[in-house]
Length: 184
Image 1: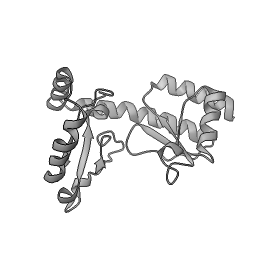
Image 2: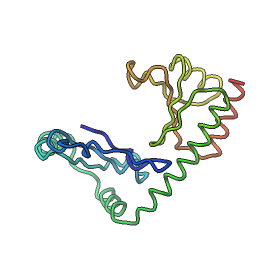
Image 3: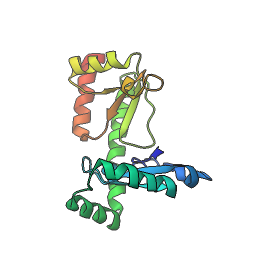
């Protein structure tokens, strides 16, 4: 199963790959997608799965029917409108996130941190020595919340913190200014 909910949020001409592009993938797996990220419908919980017909049948018949009774009609209508309307809103959102990403990455690098500019999603990951220690310092000394990577698993997440670029340019500038007061 491939969670591809962020696939449309990409930058610099990058196109996020789909698991289903791999030969034979349709026979062995499914890909999950959500309208939450692409259309800024966070919390509305409407999505879809594509791929193996057998797995989809199991998902729908054995799992989904036992979890809930369906999405609220208004959310379904909003989803239909999102999918059938002009898709310019996606490019517009990506431009906003790209501006925020560029500001945050530049600001973090200016403070001496090691940061790779992401090609996609609305998160920026930054290398640190201890993710919990760094997150606590950010919260306690700068009043900024970052997500410690250890929450994503010790194997791959520890040693990083995650910043969300879902806030305005002004708030990101404010956060960088607060960080300058702590790390300068």
